[in-house]
Image 1: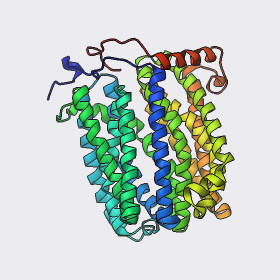
Image 2: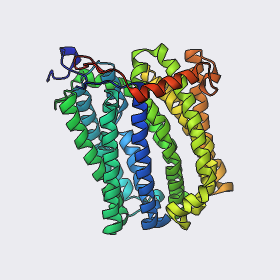
Image 3: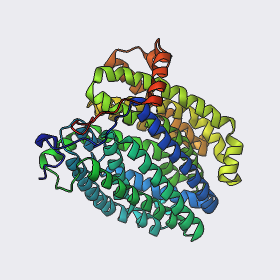
Image 4: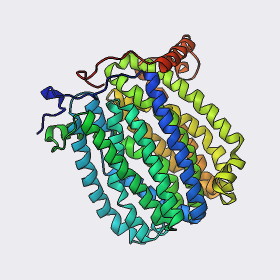
Length: 463
């Protein structure tokens, strides 16, 4: 096994950079990148809405739901597990990438072997798109899983500026590909799937190039001992990963068996708009996680502050969207999608609750307690299923939106309870302004503006 970049052999494990960034700058970088992703995502949603209409959008949503499930279900540890042990300096960057590669390829093969007979079977969900579209979508499983694994590796190594740039490049490629393949060549659902694959492949390529040049990554075979570490971590946290995906996709799966293709498309687009608000916690989490790994006690206070800011920011953003929801949907997606406006109002409270909970999930993952996230997600998922079954006969399509809100609030309540029990911090610290917040935020603004002093970090380890 190569010794390059392996902390156990004294190789360089850190990015080779002449400057460090403060937590505030890291959040700002992530927020800028995520904001670009959201804008690109809205452009893609608009292009797909006008090109595919609700029926075609429903077929594409069904294909992506299958990919999302299998890319998480069959790749345990490829993302969070590999990232955690690289951040904790227990395995090298090269080993982290090697383990992720093996898991993603093996998982894609297993997923395809299971999916093919289902696609050609007599299951209502698989009639929401043609068999060819579902088969093509299987190609997305390895590239989707591996691109997420590399994204987390760069975040764990605090390569925030390159990661922000690469994320924007990926989004730009996606928009151009949709313009060319879906609108220009009129390839419909096939073009949408190919566009998704192309942007993931580009992202993988530039991430690997950066890891090679700056983090000592070299291709090597995974060590069995390192693979066991990741497997044990994923065993405790995999339910959380699968459940998180299912909790957001279960509505599409459920409607795919009982509703029309157009209704599937309407709900999928409404849910996609709500998930755009996840940019707020996802801008915070990558900077918080390495600090929690280094110092759990101080990290708990940082997590509380980050959760408060996330809740405040999310609440303001949600109220802004809801205030203009009708003209916004009409302009962005066309009048055919106006039925999603009530769904947005229904899902808003759940989205608000989940955004703060995502920061708490990052805390438990970073203190090596992924099992807490698994229990929280399993609880929310069970409530989600029960809500769908009970409410759908009475509310129809709106039942899927209510189920989202009920499940997200339940999961968030569980995580808040566990955070209070673990840290002994008061619950108000997650929501209400605390003494010193104003000064901390002013200091954050100053540090974002002026930055830290330059210093040589070539001999330091990350995080």
